Image 1 (cartoon, one colour):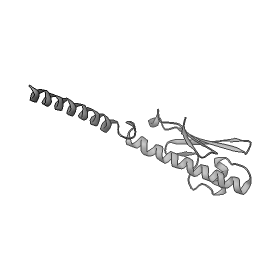
Image 2 (tube, helix red, strand yellow):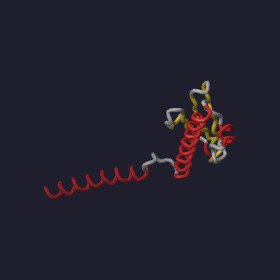
Image 3 (cartoon, one colour):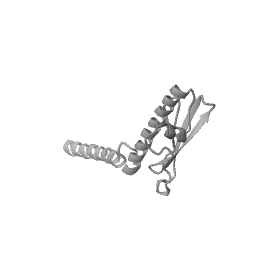
Image 4 (cartoon, one colour):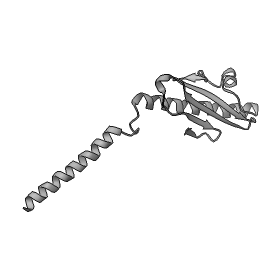
Amino acid sequence: MKKVAGLLGLVIALGVGYYIFKAQMTTGPTGGAPPKEVIDVVGVKNDLLVIGQAERMYLASHGTYASIDQLQQDGALQFSGSDRRGYHYAAELTGGEHFRIVATPTDPAKEGWPTLAIDDTMQVATQ
């Protein structure tokens, strides 16, 4: 009887372990987001950091923050700052003292993807 109970306990423990393992492998570290979404969102976050750094450099040389078009004309951005990876980037400037860059998905295939933003604190946040 003890052997049967021990074997039954072992089978239950293995079943629980398998269930937890399978649940973690299904969702993965990204919470179940498709790989393409994860890759593109990481790229957008990187773009926002590049734009934020360009804003800081522009502030240091001009004493104010700039629009994305001004950053491109100044040569501070090496890529098209308005549309990239199916996202549209827009700058919100507050009196030349603060900036906020918002990246909004515009590609119809990216419906439901996150809207991201960075501000003068250089923190990327999901909207």
